Image 1 (cartoon, helix red, strand yellow):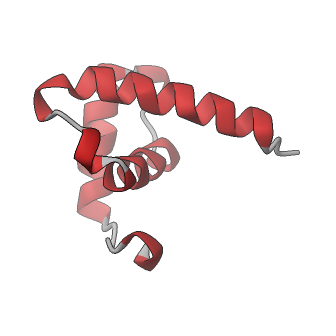
Image 2: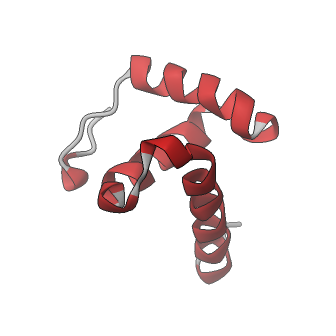
Length: 75
């Protein structure tokens, strides 16, 4: 799964690990789609990420995702 626009190739193992983490942080959103979006968000914002505060960073991701959905509604 190429993500060349962010300089990172997301692979199946990354997605599976992230889904497991999401299972702890946000079980209702522990799926591949959220995992991929979170991985992209982490890569784009990694300078601001504190590994010891992953839950806080995930909360920021969720807020950013909500805003994005409001700006770009899907049908």
